[in-house]
Image (cartoon, rainbow, N blue to C red; front, side, top):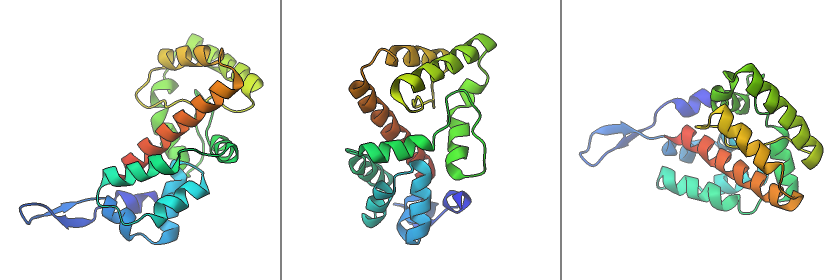
Length: 184
């Protein structure tokens, strides 16, 4: 299914020649197909349904803005459902689902971490889960293992309410970045 969104849609550019745009794919996809693509970005059905209902979008940025707005705010239940689909930082996501493929790409920089950093990430993940009751979530794309480890250490000092807000923020960032990757 992910591949259908990687194919191109034809549109005319300013000069009248043909170019490709994926926002047209989101706009013209069937409801279930568009919903599945969005659920791979964040496993929050209400969010995906709201974005699907908002079609058509004039531009990629319009679709991304709709995604940001639909995620403000996510309920605790929605956050929990989305967090449950995310692997631990430093663990290789398994499976062929689109969200697992997203996670593998996003965590590519962490998989090459040295043994000491990998050990500290594993220990930090366990401490975080014991303290907050869910996986540590951070937008890993573009961040190295040391930066992620520093953020993990810092966030372990948060109170539960602050950390919940931070995790929701990171979840929104991840969802929008994933959607942007599908649409550009």
